[in-house]
Image (cartoon, rainbow, N blue to C red; front, top):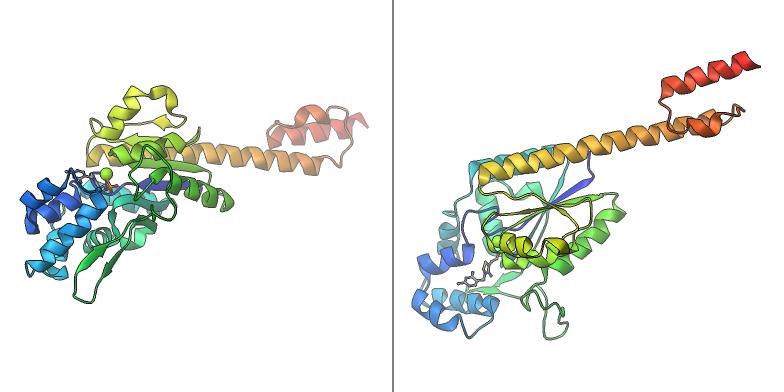
Length: 288
Ligand SMILES: Cc1ncc(C[n+]2csc(CCOP(=O)(O)O)c2C)c(N)n1
Ligand SMILES: [Mg+2]
């Protein structure tokens, strides 16, 4: 069973907080952050805050130690491991950054469960300062989506995942998220996909206010326990559907083999289960 891609947002979905806020509150200058917030795009503000943290003598290691304190619900860890064990392809789309996400996932031993992390890239410069770069270069190639911040349109990322997944024969997407940035990708999901918005969070409010825009089926969740229960239920349902579809395929191919036997009733037997085909064959033999 490998027909399902599960796409997770990171902040307030995998972890139970906002990693940007965690680092700024523990290590940064919250007053400066609040002053600059209305004046700068968020990813530029975060890059600037990393510069401030560095100038106060705090190191990359201090940032990593802070991130290791990000809370992750034990049932979400279990849900990630179960979904992976059931053959799902797990991916992340996040407006945080590679350093924050990888530090948390490595700390919890979860890195190897994800095939792809789509987020703002990072580098450590020659002074040992963490730099955060935009996922999309909005100056040379603006993404043009009015719903999303200039540095990242999660809808474009989901479209790329849809294209590559369908080439690999993966047919269904389950998307889990909480924030405003998760609304655009939820609109791109197809019928047969599932959207799991976190109840009472911005993406849930947006979906509740625009239910007609959604093609995917919506299943809300509130906490780690509910996330695990709903996610595993959906995976189970899709698996049952996929199995019954593959039985159908088996039937059709059985029927193709049966085509060598000339019969006037053959046209009607396409959807008959194998035992009926056998009976039909015997009846044909009798009729000869
Ligand atoms: C005061 C304040 N205003 C705006 C923001 C912007 N913002 C909200 S959640 C988030 C990360 C999304 O990561 P993910 O996509 O993994 O949920 C970002 C960039 C903030 N953190 N704090
Ligand atoms: Mg989020």
